[in-house]
Image 1: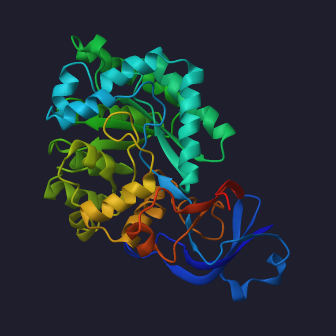
Image 2: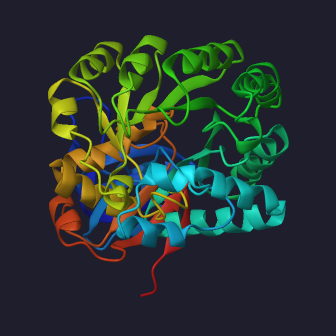
Length: 408
């Protein structure tokens, strides 16, 4: 049995209530056995049966659930710093892609990387995330775009799930873009996705979700609908990159197929927002990508006002969001999208957990949930995201064990 005591303010972030309802408990304690939370409440009411366990001291600080990054491209080869300079000089994202850069640049580097190189880099990123208080990470493939390399990426995630304290949610993103070798015969790649890649991934139980990039330069709504149909038949839940660069009907498609989430959404139509609200689809904001691409931000206030829950994630990838710093994304969601700090926190905890199918299992401090906690050197959520620092997290508990602790 373990107990975290002396919590100045505990943000439990239970799913019920509105976007900004984090259900705080002042002067709190949390008790867990093995990897499961057994008691949550005011420390003065801690039952005697939990008083004799191993004790951790929060030092009167803020405690939040282990953060959930519900959109990352964790495993990849190479970086794209040259494109960063080009964008600063005014070259557009699509122009870079048409010249052979962008996603296909990373595909080439990823195909050339060894399994050990991919695993080492992804492991280092996960360790960096845990130092920031992130304990659950959705991880997409999508930089292989052939059967062999897509399977290699997903097997990296399987290894991470077995060896790391972080909880991993693997997502198959074979429908990222059409790879260069299939540009002359697009239908051949679609057949590969539908007839080989999705069945093979599902049979090996290498993914939980199937994602599609719905965009003029990637896949159409009709193509995505066919891919989701195949994914559903194989047992993979739908998620999609939607309306990032243009209003292409991605939000509407997310509602139609009952997606767990639609992500990006900078250009979504009012009709798409209403459809997502009616269907209960989570909107995932990716403000680091918005910043790097110098776009108008996703209109979070419009989504929240329409009744769509908004998650916040990093979109960690080597091109448009080369940072795994989820607290940075939360701070940017406040500044760029006018989300309040408590709305951003709930978006990076219980709402993010819902976006990856883990509602009630991650992203909240509740009895029966996994013991994932982050101790933040701040008196409250407002001060944490207002006074932004390289890292305010001083202790991370993942699956009931200390996974990171700052030097005293």
